[in-house]
Length: 166
Image: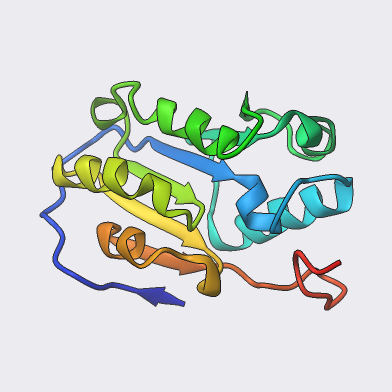
């Protein structure tokens, strides 16, 4: 489930061991998070592929509609509420302007949205390891190429139904 494409710069030598995990949860579930079962499924999928530890800083971008379902199933992250078109994406992009290249050894972006490509590529060029976690059919090609590592999520809920299907 790992792929590596393109040429990426060498990683800088770091001893901090800190990782920033940015989660575009609406991208994971395929739309607004209206119910706890969707939020729980997203958390399960993310935890399947990422070994989130105590030193990791988790930030979840969400619209105001999904804050309660997400907050009731995922405790201890930093929540960023952004509504409207690309609201959660823009809130997560702002985090990437918080001197992350000097505070974290790795950035994990849980989203396939191309809006993140330029910022992720710029941070990767500074030597910070970039991992993108996304659905296989929902990952922007340029974003995949900007990352050092790509991890794919399952496209299905635990009951076998397609994520995002009505």
